[in-house]
Image (cartoon, rainbow, N blue to C red; front, side):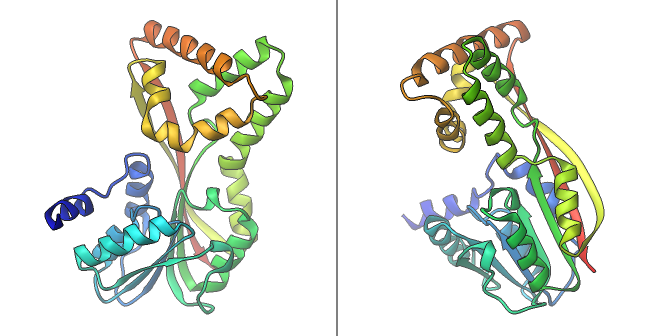
Length: 268
């Protein structure tokens, strides 16, 4: 059983967050003897990779509201023997550390998933040391645009205008544009060194393979169905599968775009 746990701990790179996180890892400034905070640590990437790359002269703290995430990362820390890393259950709206404690704060697709962005950015400023670095990534409004275009067309054909409005709200709540984040970050006292816009593709054989994918089912399907009136889910998603299949047949595959941005910031 321990051998299985060791393999599970080694395979810790989530496919979805990998491109975001690799850009983040290329952006952080390496240093010794610093305190690091990772907001929204999820399954432990890139938190634990940061801990091992910065080494045992540094302390890194992960912060996540999920009890399951805290338990998972705690086990990984133990099995991988990373004593400089610690995961804490909590909200980024109330970071449990004193002012100017951290020289580096990271958030890999984390800031766009908090309940109150303003409070979180104010807290990041409070706990950042003067000259401290903030590196954050987030996906952008055109994420999965190929899907959303078809979804909106199907809703429009059925004159489901309230659902279209809820669809637009859903996209904006989780995927703000670059200028939105630029304004927010600078408003709370950080200067922006660089803004790196990038992206990647997710490829599928057809609509069913896309909609049945585990990550799509767990991360997206609930909100997608929630925009619909009760009793219309089967009808709409049957139509979605059909239209996605047509697109896949025309193109030879179904390709979904995932644009994202990485901000490199410093506390003034």
